[in-house]
Length: 228
Image (cartoon, rainbow, N blue to C red; front, side, top):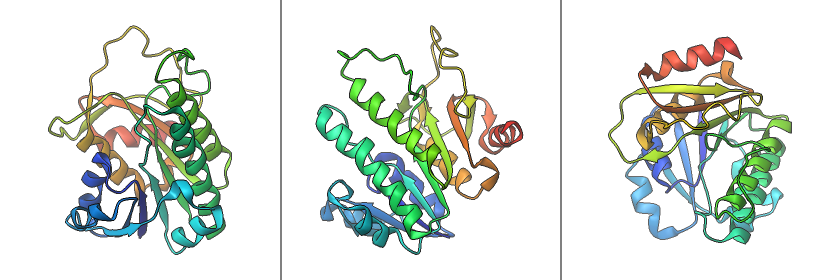
């Protein structure tokens, strides 16, 4: 397959690209100085600033790809840029993917992302929660084959190859994790989940919420697929 990873120099994306060696991977990056690092992962760097691109330009960028992975983000701190990247640019890439005839779109979101996210407006996380909620919903409403990968708190720990699924689908319980101390999830395990999801059309239309756990990734995804 031809796979486009938007946000190709991010921590998760840099761990994901080497897992996709049997595919042709385009890593979309904003900073040309990151190109050599991206090349070392086996991906082909494509320098483009998706924040400033029109839907038509993005469709040209994504044309010929089979899968788009959104792994970009504004990084928080500036609400205006958060909305511009995590909501507006993300939704334009979805429209562009449809326009370009891309079959599948994988969104990297977060555990608890939903319209009723419960984050107070005066919380610094509010803009991100709002932006991701809007982007996730736009993807659900699109004509794309979609999967939303929603990990819990990310860590730089060594991968375990195992996870615990907390919910799946747009109707999963937003209160299921309240008051619980959730196991962090290694970024490398998040990358492994994305790599596994890419080849599984049986996971289309699901939101997979997960944390660190004891169930091997493939087995956990099998259980999600059975319940989809």
